[in-house]
Amino acid sequence: MPILPPLRCWPAALLDAARRFNRKNGWVMSSHIAMSMMLALFPFVLFTVALAGTVAGLLSQDIAMETMTEQVFSVWPDAVARPILTELKAVLQTSNTQLVTLGGLFALYFASNGVDAVRTAMVQAYHDTDTRPFWRSRALCIGLVVLGGAGILAVTVFEVILPLYVRHIAQLLPIDSVPKGWEKGLRGVLALALPTGAVLAFHVLLPGRVHRLRRILPGAILTLLLWLACGSGFAFYVGSFAQYSATYAGLAGAMAAMIFLYLNSAILILGAEFNGALIEIANGMGRS
Image (spheres, rainbow, N blue to C red):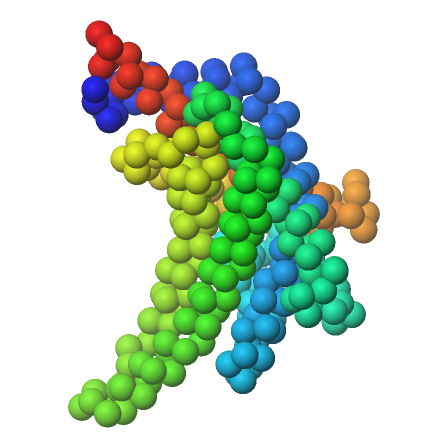
């Protein structure tokens, strides 16, 4: 049985994925994921900051919390991320960022609701039967939240430490100077590493069963490419045409973030549906 169908079948699979998306109320599921993610956004950042504070305390080191919160929104359009970051900074100034508190545990649980919404969409897209009990599914979602927070923390630390080591090594070696602009390139690579890791984790861990890596890569790559195009297009739209403040007043920032999450959720589901369509075609070719 082939792992994937020939490339000539992929356009038909993409068209079938779009039909499946519409037939299975993909737009409704996208709004569910967007709302769940929006509600989970602040608890996730609070948990990540608390995790960073705990790690910094254990290592007796300081971690720039502002840099880390900005890392969460590094691939968001600036017009969408800026109002959310402003509110987040206000919340962090008055919140208890201890990890092991009742509020910290609630933040962790509420943040996992967003992942659980993605899990439901993934199971439907892959046409799997999820036999995992509630406690195992919830534990998986919580584990992904912890993994995401640890990933953001690791990227933030790496972004701060690596330039220091490079400058130190450059002083020891017969090099006149380190090429300019490499730190900006490193920041871009690390910013892309976070959504790439998240998409792969969603496709590998959240469906009802584990699929081969080669079977999930087409939908994951499609998702990342469409996310990139969506981010650029939405940034242009917000900066040039949209006037959310005239309609939503003080809620303009939140509504822009909601619409951005809604579009990205639809793309995520479409990528999973694309994989599901490719798998069905490959299975049909194997049976025939």
